[in-house]
Image (cartoon, rainbow, N blue to C red; front, side, top):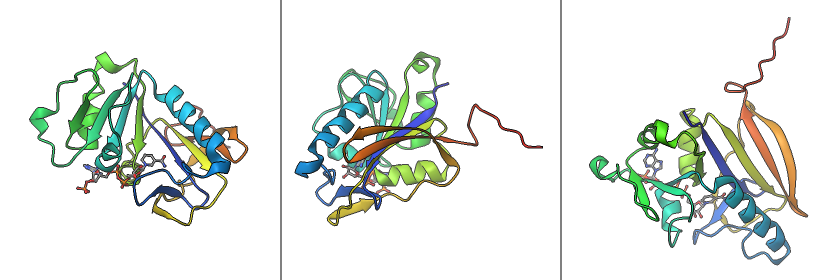
Length: 188
Ligand SMILES: NC(=O)c1ccc[n+]([C@@H]2O[C@H](COP(=O)([O-])OP(=O)(O)OC[C@H]3O[C@@H](n4cnc5c(N)ncnc54)[C@H](OP(=O)(O)O)[C@@H]3O)[C@@H](O)[C@H]2O)c1
């Protein structure tokens, strides 16, 4: 069964998006290289897999991300209309749990599953312990006073198991929850 991973980017204060829905670092000239690298990282991680997003994030997309199954969580979606996948279209689910359940089928077992936002859906997924894979967090080493949406810092159980430079002003942290960690450490 595929695990649910999460991938997102934030500023130093947890800045997540601006009021118009855009990413805070998008139009900052000195961060343009880092923003470009982050998009490339997002693309390479999610390509060929399943991306799951909240309704507000969906509304910022002009079309589905190519090469990936695009799932949208919409409380108002009719559960009966949520069961067929057509290439190049969004597929809607009335809850995150029903999406995870749907993609747990053997036929999706070779595809990685990623929660890609937004802040509300992340908060919900983490509070319900639904993220049982890894979290890929890009941290921009800058503050964004115009941000409208923020994410809380990850709890301590999300240990950093890897980090790499994303550019001059950002790095990518890879986290795993010690509850789900494959490495067991025993103390006498
Ligand atoms: N920095 C990043 O890496 C990143 C990544 C992705 C998106 N974003 C940005 O984040 C912003 C959107 O984030 P957001 O927090 O406003 O919205 P969101 O999480 O994308 O979507 C929230 C919507 O989904 C519904 N929803 C949330 N949890 C649900 C659940 N458990 N079951 C069913 N429906 C649920 C909510 O419905 P109700 O209203 O009924 O509760 C709400 O309408 C966008 O501006 C986007 O650009 C940033």
